[in-house]
Image (cartoon, rainbow, N blue to C red; front, top):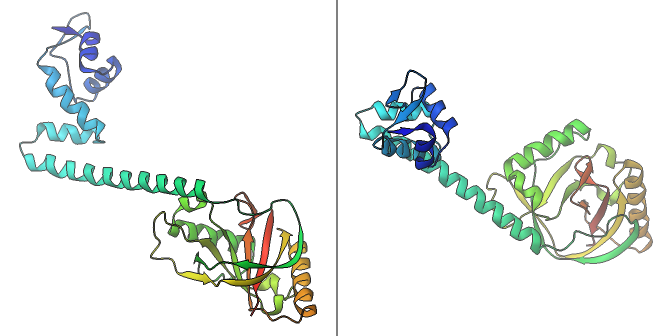
Length: 268
């Protein structure tokens, strides 16, 4: 017979594990001497290895105890079916994480950080965004609740993929006075890493946009909107009534926005 240490070494486990299994009635030595020493037989190795493999697959100790005492092979099959489903889900999650990280390192930097820029015209390509439902208000509580719900649906991993994010607001003529109470949608550029069938999407059309950079605080945003409005009027331009507010950094500081943001509206 084998001492507990020799048996643990032979089985590829630990003395502590064997003591625990004995304590919970899962696997016991063939003999306990008067001095408390535990002894195991070589034949016990096969049952222990079976138990260790089931534990490796994620079965709980109590479930394994039931299996060892059942005479119904179907019970083991059902238990392993559950384990298989769990493993498949974990594999899918890991594949999604791998794809998310691969996409992240293929993405360019989001934009200039830490600089204010006056209105200018740039060309923007067409881009598809996932979008939240329209907000019911503009308070910190409204923003955080909508943000949490939105990323629960599209998946928290989307926070890591470096694609553009921000807000879409219906704000005709870039009206600064209407901005504080305007409703909005949270945006995240759609990525290849997974799909979100429960989330509606919206297309940012390709074309020319008037854009300006602002700090993510109300004073700076309102000032930038005023500048955009004056620029459009002075140039005799016409703009779409939607305003795109896009983050210029991944680190969000306030109201789901980065420290510096790009405010953009399309020329029509």
